[in-house]
Each structure stands twice: as structure tokens, then as C-alpha cells.
Image (cartoon, rainbow, N blue to C red; front, top):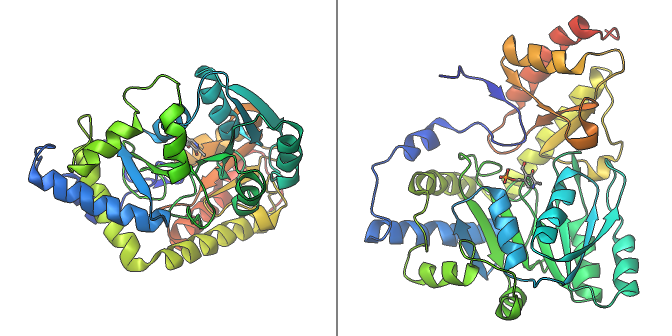
Length: 368
Ligand code: PLP
């Protein structure tokens, strides 16, 4: 049994006690009337969170399942896709498309900076054969939220290409009006803003995406969205769903919608700013100085040269019971990350900052 921790990875997040209780509700038949009522209820609520009047489908998979579903349901092998990326998750979205035979044109942007919509404009202008753009809304590896609204106005408004969005660490925390920003396929996951365990992913599908699905020839079976939509009409999923996570989802959506999404977004903005200020007050530098594009779900902090980063993370974990995330890919050993999404309070972050203050001097930091 794990003792209670201040789990500050950028997902999975802690789970509120009432949602933990809901997760343990008695099992039901996933082909029966109780499940039918449940999936209809949560689907209607998810549409409110996605701010879409079109389809939202629930897949039993982690977030990557929804991203894979977005790719295989809209593209064919050989299709050209544009992938602007400034981090590990941006890269991975393109890797998935490549695995299914897409020709991925990567626009590599410095990690820790925001993607300039103009580079997308130039690339789309240069190659009219590009069919789709893959974009990660919130780059969890660097703590940057890309300007999806501006990117969409280029991709959809100027060029009318398919827009596939990885919203795994943003949706439900940071505003992402799916219809308002004209996004075609948007995938996210249960263990992030939704305060429930890993195991479900959610994907919105626009009319243009359904149109693309008709001719998309990438192989698919488990993640066939057409099958998911047909089964949803009768209140089911094609395959056995994670019923327990559905119970949690239902309780979580009630909570989010009672609070109101505007208030949920404000809460994340407040906590994000509080975290960044607290880190700076300790004399530490953020990976990015771009306050306008700083993520309100995760903060990336540079590890000073004098500090033993792995020992810092270990002491925070073992002695302070604060679980931080390290850096990924080329940022491994250079940063640590503090997650502040989903179920998080100012007190949780105060605890992190106080623990850092105690541990930093023990791992080579001399600025206090
Ligand atoms: N995309 C982003 C932006 C993420 O933050 C993550 C997970 O942290 C993923 C994709 C992968 O999601 P999962 O591990 O749920 O498959």
C-alpha cells in the first residue's frame, strides 16, 4: 500500500475521496440498461466540457489510444501530415502517425518555446498536398501551452486542413472550445483534468473528421470510431469498457459541471501563476520565460548546475512524500516538473514549495 502522497506528476493526479468511493460501486452489465443510462449521461456531460455539439466518444485506453484513434480514423498510408513540435509529446504524436504510414513533415521548434503559427502558415503554403496538422495543445514535457486558437485560424481558417489535437494535459483544465476553435479530432485522458484513474480516453469528432473517416485507409479495429458511434447509439461500447472508471467519470463530471468550467479554468490559472511565482521566489529559474504561454497544468523548473537533480527528486519523494516528475528526452536531468492539474489546491503547492525549501540546501543549492 502506498502512503498518502502529494502526487504532483502532471497526471495521474490525486483523486478526491468521493470519486474514490464512486469507483468501487457494484459492477453492472455493460450491455444492460444501467450502463446505457450511464454512458448517455457522461457523454452528454463530456460534450459540455469539450464545448462541442458534435460527437464525443469514450475509449477504454490511455490518452495515446485517443491520439491513435484520431490518426487511423482520418488518414491513409502515404498521406502528408504536418507536425509542428516543441517537446516530447509533440514528437510522439508524429511518431504514431509515422507508425501507420503517414509522411510526417516535422517542424522542429526549440523545446520550452511556443510554436509560432506563422511557421505552420509557411509550411502549408509551400506544400498544398498536406492533408492534416497534428498539434499538442499543452506540451507537458516543457510546460508550454501552444496558441491553439491562432494555430487553428491558420490550419482551418486559411487552409481548411484537418486539425488533430493532443489535448491530454489541457482539456478540462485550460480553455479549449472544440467547436469554437474548429478542431476536428481532439483526444484527452481520464487521469489528467478529470481527477480519475488512468484507463479512459475521450475523443471529439467533427463533421469534417467523419467525412475524412469515409476514405481513411489506415488499418484499425479496436479504435474504429464508426463502430464506437454505432454502439453508443444503443448505449454501449464495442468492447468491454472500464466500467469502474465510468463510475468515477460520472462523479467527476458532476463535480466539474457544478463548479462550472469557467471557474475550473480560473482555478487552474490561479494555481499555475501561484506555482510559477513560488518557484521564482525560491530563486529557481523556469524552463521558459514566456509567461503568456506558460502552462497552467504543469511547471517545468531548471535544475541549477550545483544541484544533484535525481537526489532532489528522490528526497522529495522519500522524505517529503511529494512526487515530482523529472525531465523527458533531451530535458532528462535538466529540469523537474510540478503538475498542478485536476484535483489540486494552493495548499498542495505550498507544501511542495516548503518541501523544496527544506530539501534544496541538502542537494547542493546555496541560494538561501
Ligand atoms: N500527450 C500528452 C500531452 C501527455 O501529457 C501525455 C501523458 O502525459 C500523453 C500524450 C500520453 O498519454 P497516456 O500516457 O495517457 O497515453
